[in-house]
Amino acid sequence: MQMRKVFNWQLGRNASYVYPQVRPKKQWAMVFDLNKCIACQTCSLACKTTWTSGKGQEYMFWNNVETKPYGGYPVGWDMGILAKLGVQEWQGEKYTGKTLYEASEKDEKILQHIPVDEDWSHPNIGEDEIAGSVNKGDWLTLPHRIWMYYLPRTCAHCTYPACVAACPRKAIYKRPEDGIVLIDQSRCRGYRECVRACPYKKPMFNVETRISEKCIGCYPKMEQGQMSQCVTNCIGRIRLHGYLSTPDKANKDNPIDYLVHVRKLALPLYPQFGTEPNIYFIPPIHAPLSYMEQMFGPGVGNAVKMYKNIPNDQALKGLLVLFGSMEKTLSSFKVDEKLAYGYDDKGNEIVKVPVTEPMYVREFFDQKLKVYRQNTP
Image (cartoon, rainbow, N blue to C red; front, side, top):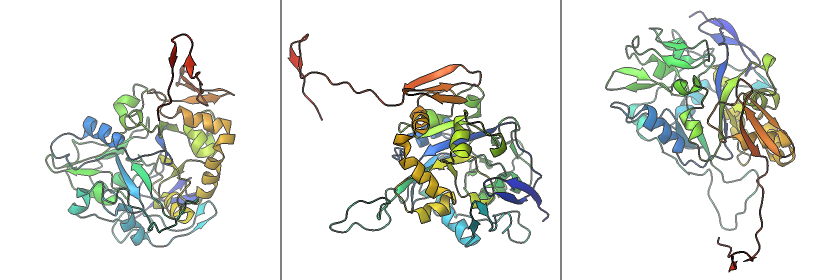
């Protein structure tokens, strides 16, 4: 079928898409710090108890956390489509290989991997499985020879979403005000083309209502200036939610722009798919670069070096401390010698936290209370 050319900044070139290029007024986006995720699944349960506790939604996890390299929900979602796409190349920061739209088969809009029903039955398969085996006398190095890491995922509300491109009913649309991708359930007829087309496998079919559903970006909260459920309930404080500009309009005071465009510490997941996803990941510093380059693109090496240097980088250190420190959406931030500040879209201060937590050393014997203090591990 005939494709249009759109600019995909994650690939550094024009790429193919079904519809002409139209960007929203502002783009919903998230950043996840994978160095801090402990797979407690609090985000998964916060999402599920809020949005997918009804009939036909039992298997649905709009937010899931999987263990890489072996875990995945549905099983093998990424390995299946990567195998079909085959080996592709980057030249520096420019992707010279084919995207899923450009590699699509005849009469299809996008190259597809279709999981079988059983693949949706094991949301925690591969959890804590490591790559390699621990031998007698092994020791730790960076990167680790034996490794794994947790990868939390939700819908990425892509700029060029496969679900929108594939839907024959045009029941899926991208909101012009914030870029959130939604399914109009009054128009959906349950053809499941969105489920087949999405390379990240985030649209899901409700077997009771016979229509598709997906993450809604917690837009009722976002419209009130608050972050989503998975962000505010994250006990590891790995998430930050806000709005992303295009690279040419990046604002260094916007925390999402700063991490994605200015410092390039946060990277997209499988940018070679060509959908321009809007969830960004700070890569783990302990996993092999070759594996992570396939997942996050050629900027991984610089991102890992930058993260290791954060103790000497006051601005980044202060911004990462702000993760999980407030429920309101952070529009801008500032860091000085001691404190990190966060502001809403009107410039009002909504949070202020110390960049380095103060340490207080108390005397072994309290003269006022006449008691001894014991150190309890």
